[in-house]
Image (cartoon, rainbow, N blue to C red; front, side, top):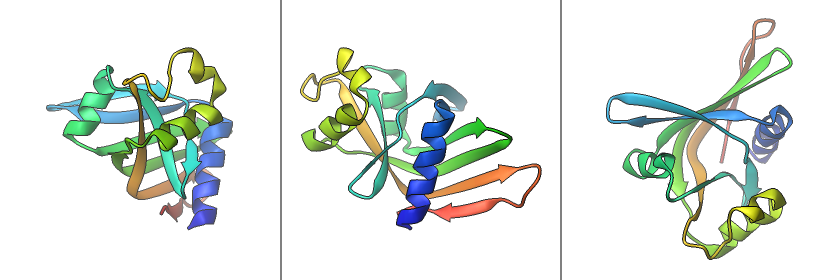
Length: 135
């Protein structure tokens, strides 16, 4: 599964931007994201607690991300679980130094989530989908 995780994160990083889908009541919400980080063997993303996406994920942790690159796309679906440990926040900020202009591990706003019960599927119009179970 570690190889699946690395392949997933590599795809997301090379794509640069992915789109995170959540729900708010009966309304889907989608927005661009750019953080994809491996910490303690899990796929992590980052946001701010003041953002609506944070409130949506805390109300319903089921989410999906999607990215497209060079004729292929990846969808990662599962549950996003908040990791409120300082070391998890710091690891994300160390991996994405540009975020340090807006976030600090101790600012009360920086928030990281990891995927739980997740599956990544890499698809294209030219090959069968590749299903990757994530830890």
